[in-house]
Length: 108
Image 1: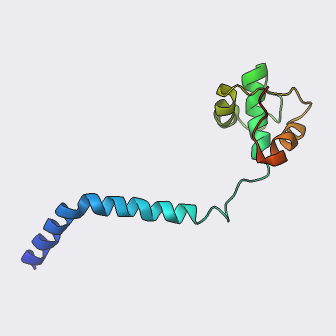
Image 2: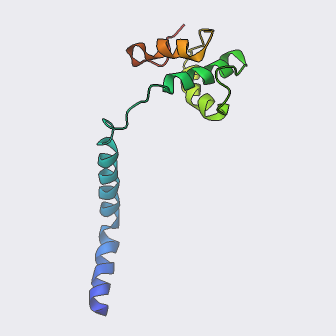
Image 3: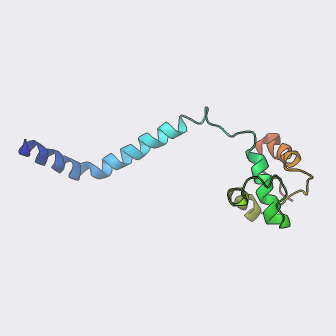
């Protein structure tokens, strides 16, 4: 019993790097295999619009029910890329613009 455990521990010590890489690859494949099931939801562009309004205009009027931190974090990438809010009356009209062609924003 002790000899078998030492053999197993030695094998794990020698192959731990390879085993780690294989487990990461397996986990990645399993995550990617769910993309067709858990795809982008229809309200994500509206949340980006709310975050962009806060970053670009300094106001937070698009549905203030949800806190702005996650929305601002989501809109930060497009904002730093030079994209700006279009000053729409509500976040859904802006979201429809985002949804067209599955783009997040149009560059100025």
